[in-house]
Image (cartoon, rainbow, N blue to C red; front, side, top):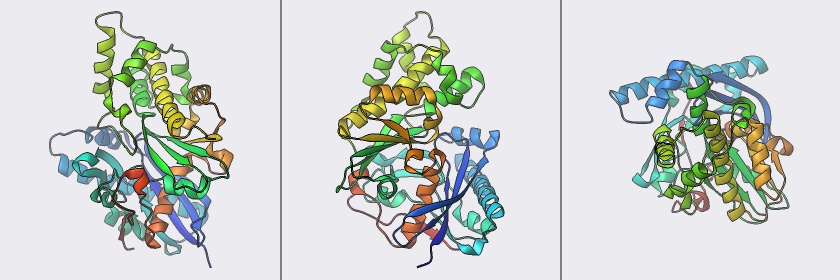
Length: 370
């Protein structure tokens, strides 16, 4: 049977741009990455997405305009791949387009990913599969994380393993041989570190973690960040986003600890936020995957050398990037949405109740034809 071609498109909580991966899938859903591309957000679009994370004036119209702009960024990333590989739009079975999450409130029955799949189909001439989360939420689930079933397909081994994705928000997948995967969000990964870095250095992120590596972890602040937030105590399944972890959340807890004393040094706060990411993730792994033979890390956090070193210090097993298992760290999430588009077209119910808490497995997504 001939392999089918799909392109996965992902723009995550870090809101810096879109990643695209062209992959082929065999009849069993095993992927082979052919090419990748990325397209950056303009400063305007990034700021608009950040603003739309909270209520504001004319937000319905602004959200629609931003969704169209996102479709144009997605189309740019798609066209970059097609031009580079010589693949024609007619050869692509579908695009899997995640959209940009701006609200995530599954307890209230909704999650919002700004997207314009009809416009994207018009721009590219390719069918689009999108809106992956809403059916799971309708079935009582969290709608997130969506990737554990994909992780099981590409990273499962003969020993227990954990896969840790460190995007804006962290999520972990626990893979035990012969068992269904479980997965859940662990808390903030890069979202607070990126925000703090940009405020104090003007740079969108702390490259290699070098700025924060010069700071000193403030143990009292770290303890308060965790102990003052009830979300960390919730049992899996659970998910979160910028709705909870934002600048006001951080500043209020810093004020609780500081109480008029000398303000924390910015680099010390950055080091503490790195420790928050590492501790919340490793606490989850140690609790839910105590027998893991190794941990594979993907997402932007995998390129933070200081964070990777701290993860290794806090875990009893080896920590590698997903490149150790054959998939580049920056490709994993986009590839996952290519796989989700493939699964949708195959009619496979890949929503996993053990991960999201839904009433049952559901076919995820909807199609906008070419």
